[in-house]
Length: 129
Image (cartoon, rainbow, N blue to C red; front, side, top):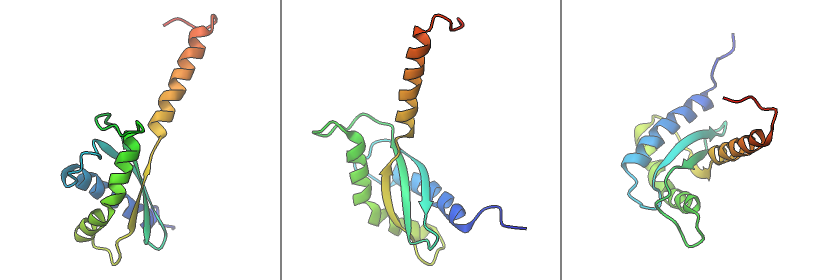
């Protein structure tokens, strides 16, 4: 019987849990704000991990108006610290290098929801609630 979950999936989930705590409690950079670790994809050799984060806070606005870019830049800058702290918490031979990527799933979902509301609002055949 094959394994239900591969090791990379389990390591990715554990990294996601630990990173969420580390970012919340240890990162003091105001550019980070409130971020959520949405997903972690780990390579099969456990050398690299793509960390997808979504930015929830609009407190920090940079000169180009994008707080998400500033948060991702701050997290990539702190990736060495986060990697060291992960290596202390996890019992892995090699701790993967962390690469933070902005997860735009929530923004896309909100955009699609507004598009659907506008098309249903224009439809005279739509049922009333």
